[in-house]
Length: 243
Ligand code: ADP
Ligand code: MG
Image 1: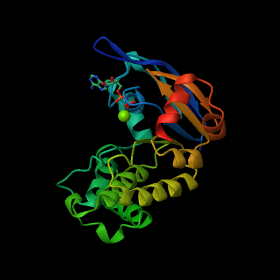
Image 2 (image 1 turned 30 degrees about the vertical axis):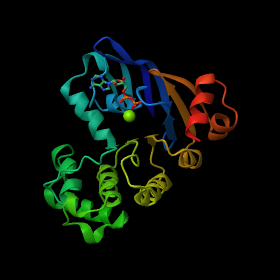
Image 3 (image 1 turned 180 degrees about the vertical axis):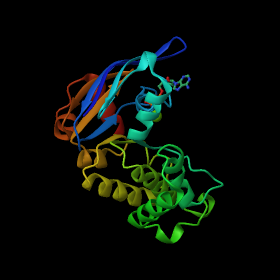
Image 4 (image 1 turned 45 degrees about the vertical axis):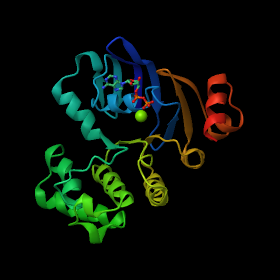
């Protein structure tokens, strides 16, 4: 359902993604782990052209895009099919929680405003934030802000949800509620690609774990395979550091 082949990205002279191949099944939950600076964020960002890949093919559902010659309409098509949850929430400071969720529904998905508002309210109820619809981000805790960020992605009904270290910017006290919301998203059989340093959560939620190093996927497997029987020495070193 999602297929990535030969995805390549270079910043200046530095290769950051080196011929990434990855298939993800419908409803599958894939977690990416790996040291920082290894291309995890760039991989996620290339899938919806927040970063423009140099080469490769991306298929999401019925849309296949050749990165080297992607047209505007195709890029919009990828954005319609993906929801992105950012490490730093990336909410609009001058919009309320509800308006933040409505934004992409109106501008990218072209829903009428009333329909977007109704969907935003439904998502706010699902995320436990119904009473915060009219609050601005500055009036919300970090955990609440990130739940709005996840709600914004949920509202898109996207074929793929991308999470880039959604709890790394949070004070420890807010991490639990954000992980709980991600578990609820997973229960809806949503296809998810998640970058995280929460190894316990990764073990629990992932169907498959990818270990990235220097722009490549160097090992992948079930949580048991990756955590209990790692093969690559770089993965062994990484796990020794983070656990
Ligand atoms: P990770 O998410 O695994 O920590 P990133 O994908 O953020 O890694 O970054 C991979 C590499 O690409 C790093 O060396 C980083 O410095 C570089 N990089 C990322 N974004 C840019 C950019 N916009 N311009 C130049 N270099 C970048
Ligand atoms: Mg990153």
